[in-house]
Length: 211
Image 1 (cartoon, rainbow, N blue to C red):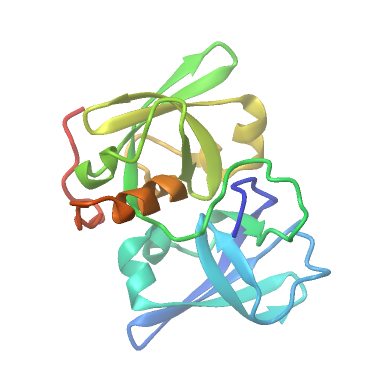
Image 2 (tube, rainbow, N blue to C red):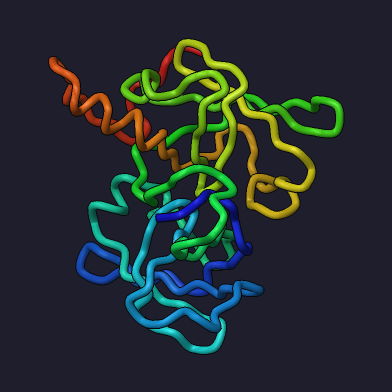
């Protein structure tokens, strides 16, 4: 489990395709690795991955075909910046919200505009995810826990304060940037438990609403 509070920005050092999967090597930069060991979970842009190799600040992860199809990690290139968060330890403060590191679908930056000292972002979302996103609810974007300010057909908006811009990769976003989305965990499971629940699945890049 994670909290959506980004601990450091890393950089992709190498992307090595192998039999339909890939080995992703990340320079973890300032991330504290003192307690990180093989087999630990780390969220890379909101995707929970398992550490398979450690060499000083370099962490390697095997990324499955399923993960490549569901997330933006298949577009990673050497030099790309990524959000990093270690798994939450029992007893730690839950500064953001409960995040599993399991991406539900992909969104796209549709609009960016200044709002006082902050920046307002509008994201297009697949219609299959719309029902999980509520005004003043929580959303995880590339691993960052954020509050939804407004929702509309096929889109939602968030406000990014200067600190979040500085401490995450959101400062790199441009219109058209693709992001990993994880909806509220409770909403996802509540729907499964209700009679007549939908079995629709989020499909990357598919079925975006009208902006």
